[in-house]
Image 1 (tube, rainbow, N blue to C red):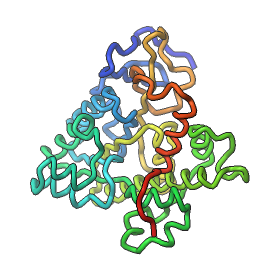
Image 2 (tube, helix red, strand yellow):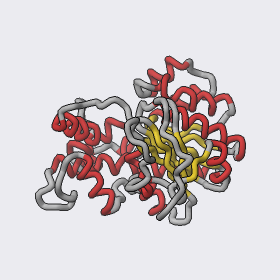
Image 3 (tube, rainbow, N blue to C red):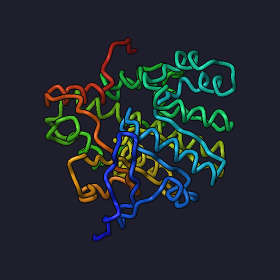
Image 4 (cartoon, rainbow, N blue to C red):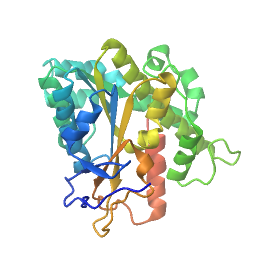
Length: 312
C-alpha cells in the first residue's frame, strides 16, 4: 500500500501524539478523528501505561467525542468491577479523591494519568465503568488455572465474565511471543505457568468486554470510550476480539500507539498498519530494563498477576 507521509513529522516531546490514518498516512487532529468516530459505538484507545502522550491524547479525545456525542460512557481497565460502588460514590460526591483512591485500590499513577478522564466524566455527570476483573481473582487463576473458578464462592465468581476464557489463535501466539515463549499455549511443551498466565489474561479481556456490553445495554444509544493497555486491543485482538465474538455487529474503533524513535526520520508505518484502525505515534519511554531476562521475568509476572494472597 502506498501513501503520502511527507507531511508527517516525528513527535518532539513525550507529551506529543501524532495521529495517523494507516490507510493513507494522513495526519489527523483529535477533532478530525472525533468527526470520523461520531458513529462508532465503542472507541478503544490503547495506551502504554504511564506514557504522558497516551494519557493526554485520551483526555483530548474524550472532550472532542463528547462535543459530538454527549451521551458518553467512560469504561476503564484501570478500575475493577468489585469497586464500582466505590467509584460511583465518588462520582456522586460522597467520597473525596483520596478516599476514592484508597477504597478502589486505584493505580499508583491515577493522579497523573487518569484523574483528568474521571474528573471530566464527573463534571459532566457521565457514567464511569470499572471494567476490569478483580485482581485477587485474576491472580488465583494465574496460579491455579481454570480450577480456581470452581473453588470461588458464588459472590466472587459473579464479578467475572460469564464466559471467562473466549480467545483466538492469533492472541495465543501473540501472548506466547510477548512473554518469551516459543510455543503456542496449546502446545504440549507449554509450561503450566504460562498456560495459567494466559488464562488470567483472558479473564481480564473477557470481563472488560462483558463490562462494555453491559454498559451499552444500560445506556442504549450512548458511546463508550474505553481506555486500556494496548496489548488488550491492538490488531483488534484481546478485549476487542472477544467483544466482537459476543456482538459481531458492534461498531468498534481501535486507536493504537506506535513508538517513533527520535533517531528515525521516516514514520513507522511499515509493519504497524494493522495495529489499529487509527494509530498515534509517540516517543519511546526510557527503557525499563537493559537485561533481557529481567525484562521477560517482569513481563511474566505482569501477565500472571503474580503476588501474594489467599486463594480458595
